[in-house]
Image (cartoon, rainbow, N blue to C red):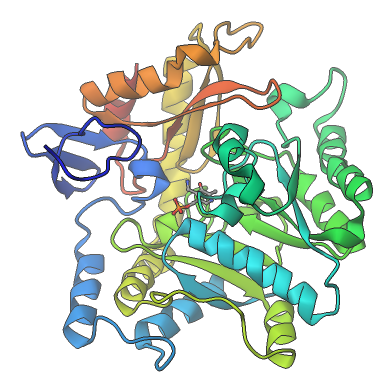
Length: 432
Ligand code: PMP
């Protein structure tokens, strides 16, 4: 009997034994193509010698020193590297141990900024209906994933949710893409006016929606208008790039492609690339200065913030992404993947949409390709696909969302950026 409290069920999954490049092997020797990098984590593939070496070297120097007493060379280097490549205005990196922690830090940074600037009446957040921001109470409270939230609702932060920018399902007949982008963004202004803009701390969104909607980007112009609305009402803009950031969409930060700079951006997953648990909330100089010049102390912290070994991994990963050409490779192999998916599934009766950016791609599975009628969620089509693919040695990431009728089954593909054209062929064959 296993004494590990398994993720969701009592069933014990296969035991992973080793990893090499885009493949994982279980203890019985079965080989799996990691078509989703777990959940868009393994951007460099498994067994990267440079990252492993960086971790070992740091372990040999010092594994841990509490940030109440010390900073460390890898933490300083990682923060410098991130800020050098971050969106305009972003000047400080708060280094944590994962995605949910990054979002918690972002929510508290935003709230404390409001306190320091005398806006204590700002106590709520606005986010989007199809979104996932993590599983801790604050992150869960801002996420729009109602079935996850429901049992915990009474003990979470106050947040309300607008429709996402979902061109393919929500654009009206006769509406141009540009008109739709503005209308979808204006839903934020409507919501601010409904709840009272002077009560809102921040608007929180994933630039490319991940787990809940399957690699769903916004249409051109959407985030520019969102930024304008946030500025008009002095509401902070938090972009959650935990899943879509770190080169996954073909640029280091996904928001670069939307032409928008946030006040805070969260990253994780690809930052550690699976080698160490690490995440970050990167914030503007204005937020940092308000806290420094105000109370002088961010009222937050975890024992493992800025962990030297985790930072050594993150630093090596970001160096490989930015100096090793891997972000560009994500963009290029993403195009190859998109062509292969379109060729194989473009006419499939149960594929309603093929979308994404870079190596962040998804198929939307529907009961009817013509009408785009979703499958009955009770059938669990995406989950069934995940199981069947896994049996055939392919890891792909399923999601079935049911939010205000915008339901759907998606399968997310997010392979390591080092994937080759042949391996993309293998991925698509197995998926088919
Ligand atoms: N934000 C987004 C957009 C995510 O996709 C996730 C994880 N799927 C999180 C936050 C939470 O990250 P973690 O699971 O590392 O806590």
